[in-house]
Length: 110
Image (cartoon, rainbow, N blue to C red):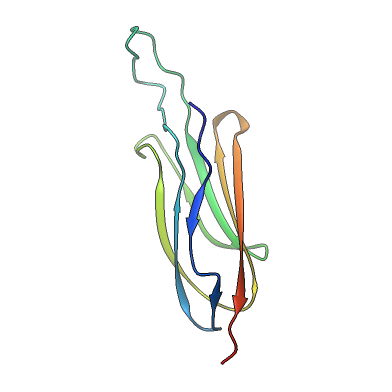
């Protein structure tokens, strides 16, 4: 099973100093390589192993996933707004899989 397009929900406008909530979810089976399929054969390992969110090249949040993470990983985190820029999201997986998306943030005038 191939992963689905990553989904990220966050504001696209904010004021400097605001704390914003970011939610991310990716459709992915997160197979450990330990489970047997209906045919009795081991299902190949297929996991997202790392998630990184950066803002203009600086890490905001990262997570390393292990075998205990359920299918369709969901993350929710908060970050303080320091200025206008782009949030880049990257999911890395077994076999060199890489999925990315980016969301720009615009600063509101006070």
